[in-house]
Image (cartoon, rainbow, N blue to C red):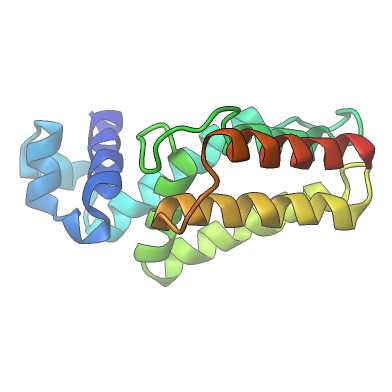
Length: 175
């Protein structure tokens, strides 16, 4: 039931943002009673914390562990965040945008958890075995890219999407 509720919250975040997250609406979307929902999640903040935690864990699963070759973490960051081909902004598969929505709208505790994850990821990028400035530049470019997708701020489309992504990948390979 927990995953069904979190799936519903993710769909609602993508479709309507944080304002759409109300306990009664989440229960209805997930097909559970409000009492069942409250058993697992006592508040909107707890729902957003749950979404963020699950998405961070999924993202972590896509990233290499210790002992990976130089540049593997920066390349995985790009691969896990920016698809090889352009997909519509707001697509459910765009989990990074969902995590950002949860992180920004869940209050100071949720944002603090998101910041801790980012500090850890930045440390791993800096220790990725390639030039730390290049690895950080790739992270910042990717983060700006998905922010542009999230807010529909003229993100690269089609051929430009593929070309920009290829250049970021080449930066990692050349570093």
